[in-house]
Length: 304
Image (cartoon, rainbow, N blue to C red; front, side, top):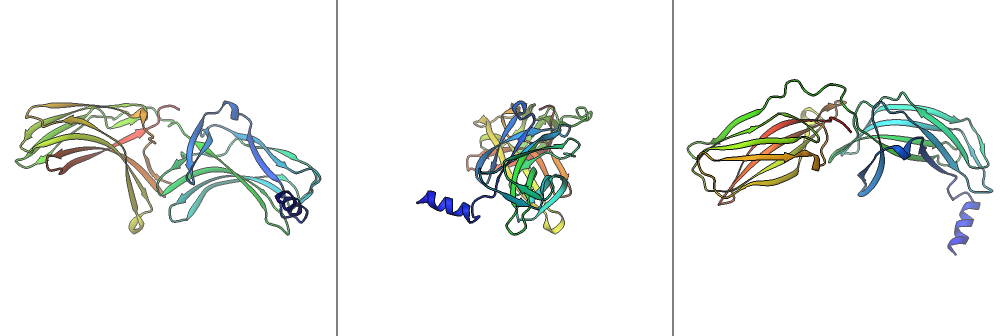
């Protein structure tokens, strides 16, 4: 019965007019990354800003079928999608693949976006996404257009050398007459595979501290002015001390960043969003009260 319905649908034009597919000329050599899209993992090819995006579009037509169309085109699109449904295209290049006519068999078209600008990194956040995609459109006169999309993932290496000014972070925090600590991190700017090294010094301890932990927190900001919206998430946290410290004690910190899903720090991308990272030091006393101090760090990509 299902086969009969399928055949009938094809005869009256209800089946798919054609099946587009996109292949890339160097996809066998490219790295891939798994990205969550609509709740499922999707494997995407990784490109840098210098890499050409080239390959072929194939329009698969079932034997015996014919397809009249008003033209075939492929677009390279860079867009930012916001959590409330709005989206903004910051890049859109079009290549016409075929003039209006009729397809009577499967056909393949080459495409080349060698000079396309990919200035931003791809980003898949909580409330915002930055996407690069190829969109194939087969326009038809009396029927809906056939549209096929394929995302790619862009990672850019900063052209600048490592930050010249990258001093250590030193700060004293505490509660008057109860707690006084000093923490020090070796740098304020780290590449994504770096190691955060530091020390926590206890200068005054009159609270009954139960344990201490350190967190990496990401803050995603979208919009601006009265429409600014911040969303924070804890990337990781781990305990660096268990038990009550004494005055004069120091606790070492060594945090390897390479094991976490981090991005570079993004500041005001296309005037739409920013992503910042913080080291959050948390002390918990015996009554489960939490005392914390947050310090922003800058993350950058050293290599792919």
